[in-house]
Length: 262
Image (cartoon, rainbow, N blue to C red):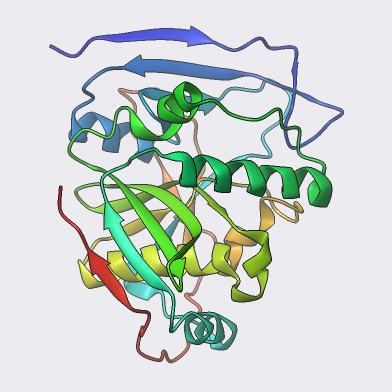
């Protein structure tokens, strides 16, 4: 039997994306979440961090939009093909989520850089908090993807492999390798994995149009947006963001990769 705990954030907490607004979230805490239930939540606009699922329920703001890329229609454009080419020597490894000092150090350096670059608040992270966010709750469907250059860890991403989709969870990288456009490369990697597996959708998380941190997700097209706010037993309604798909010819995906099983 599925057991979950429901709770809500403080509705007066300052929003992470708009400093002059407050945010409000609904949470589920679920141990051993079944794949089918996780997929149902993702399809209804929820996100997963560890054993926690959340969805925004802000009363006066609807800027956070759930979107999903339509995998069948996606082809890397010219700029994205250049990103793939730049990463021809990037080693990709997919395994189950894990934690070590190397990952913690990269997470700290990434957020310290983002504090300077974009003003993100950051106080450091402990092993327990990192595990809560990224390691616990992966069950049968959660994975970690790492990126290395000459043996050095330069990026770490987390995602869920669901029945008909991939749901991206989080990504952080070494700003000393910013020239590689690793954020875009991580999305491209997961999109092309989904394409190879004949999955239908890629969920990149919430999109905020024209936002300096959240606006980039519209660069991967075609995509759909969730136009209602369904509860867990209600039907989600998705519609194409554009009336027609935008695609261009693609080069082969040549980044080196090795897949480890656990």
